[in-house]
Length: 472
Length: 117
Image (tube, rainbow over all chains, first blue to last red; front, side, top):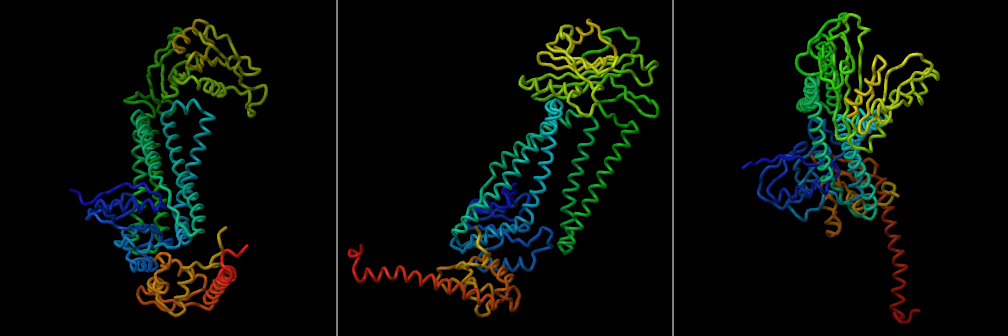
């Protein structure tokens, strides 16, 4: 039978009534708190009816080499009334008392709210403030991407699951910080009446958030690493390693300096300074190693397995031979048989999207005379997204509302006859005042949107083949 | 609206200051206040610790000696003045009470409850 239990407790810093009730329940079940934070350690004991009190010592710091004189004085005051220290972490101090009628540590509600707020201002609020700023910045980027590039985002499970994680992080921060200020406002009003206000418990909400975040992360991991290319599979463990080195390195340096009885200010500066330098140095090293490996052709940046390479103008190029749904040879005879074909895309619950390209090698003879083809096909799985996606793809190239493009030189989509393509709508990109055709078309089928570019003008027969192969 | 600090002393503040009329170890105040009030008022250890810090910062008490974990304090002039102001406020409240409630009681004693219209 195990004598030590470690639990990941989901209490917010200020939820002292929740923590007290929980610890009293644990003690009644025969588990006494020994150590916080991170995983809370409990040691098996005789089931006891104990009274717990969570209080705050605002001047304590996580960088303190040990309890300060003031903190020891505070402990002495608590001991005098029978309160024994169970565990502490910086400002958070947890005491227990065997006397069920013991005078509480806090007997003045105004003082309690004030002490808690002074403690919260030192770590809890700044930490959540920084986290909230980072989360809001990323959410803003995410929303911006939904507006500007909805097709790329909605088809990417990696970006969607990242977005879910940012939304969850935002909700967690907002509920935690908002909950604190709501509690504080009500606690101040109650204190004016001489009453104490119980703190809100968000552990169920945190549990749901944690579960959603874990699922989103697992999905992200599956899509990003499992289905990712070789470069991703190398970068991901490196980034995980980097994060672990920073996380454990910070604690290692901080705890080492604490053991050496270095003052909290020196500890803070050395820990943050050292870890900043280490994180930048490691990141620089990782990027340098990846760039060097990739530029020497040791690591294909796309695809799996061994890919043939060739050199052209001092650079290494890859000879991808991906299967693509529509080839130039499907539409006409070509006197060239060494095409490079690439195929890549994403598939989510909302959209599937792929891009395909067929082009000659750079070192091919008459390179410019060999036809090329590229296209993007978006399959919309949820009908209500169709119009939004079509408009987004339309706006990617149409410059009607783009003030950066001068009038008279804009690229505009103009409706063309969709019948040869077998489509419902068809548009051709036309450059104002140009005497040449772009040969880029936007084709709208029942559930699919195709953007295709030829470097020749397609015939009606070729258009029909496009409709048959891609319009599906 | 929150009250200005120490504008009105709470019962606990009042008795802590009262205990420090003569030099006393902070820890002893924890026993002194219930003894002084017949157990009607108790001060929690955390509340007392923070109160002493705030009284020190406000110059209402000063530290006199430190012996291990025992720190002794005594009321300053400012603290004594504040305590007296609080006493006068409480006395004024008691006089107001006696004037209003006391008069009514005297009236009832003289004329009886039913005579009053």
